[in-house]
Image (cartoon, rainbow, N blue to C red; front, side, top):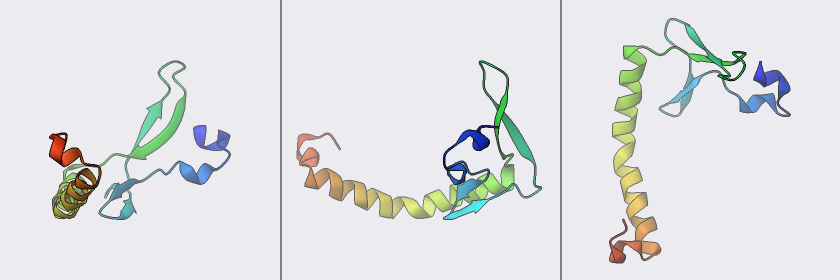
Length: 86
């Protein structure tokens, strides 16, 4: 797998980042990710289902107001807000 070929294998995480934490699928199921050119399995990722997806959506909804405020500040600082680009 690709992880064995990386200089820093810790960069390839086989979990999903949800609500500030790396999680596995509730049932432990994994999906194989293949290189389309060779068919070689290069990684595995959690096969998240409805419950995990729901938690991710709820976390994103909670995080959105703070991110929206950050984006507005960044746009304002760049002068983009006045130009209508944000």
